[in-house]
Length: 212
Picture 1 (cartoon, helix red, strand yellow):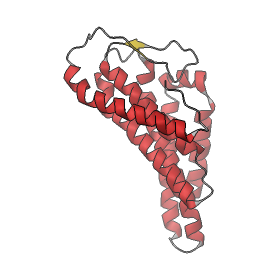
Picture 2: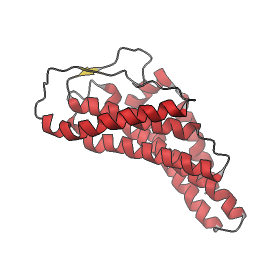
Picture 3: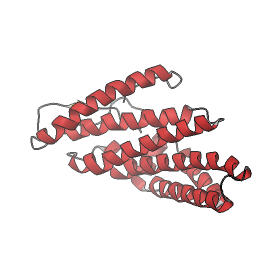
């Protein structure tokens, strides 16, 4: 995994710049090299869901590409989580980061996952984990949208039924996240990282459903 200082916006942006540069290279060469399954190169990445620095190793270039994108999605989610949402501009900024992160995880699921050799043994890139991350980011983005809409209802700018619809959508995204968190392949990983993720999503799902 790529290490950055969560409080240092500049280091995150620099990290994203280099990741995007490498992503563009892999986007061009991976499809051409895919049929050469054994390139003679070992791609080492630390498992994001494990405390050990000894991560899985693969010779699949799509595994390398997936990890590059995973780091990009993680950085976008980090920026979303650390953005001050006390202002409308801050909410918009956080929402954008979460939406970009969701699209990155979706890209891994739809363009890379199926082409990773030995997917069953490379646990970080199991599809359930990728989709859990995608739906969590969609839920966080929708929560930002809800936070933005609440004052607008009070000001009479949008109808109350509109915010109910937003809250319902938010609850649905959190429910999907909870469903993936409860899958055994994901539960095993979250035990090593933070088992409170599922509880947090359950709480947000219930509060959003109540608001709807």
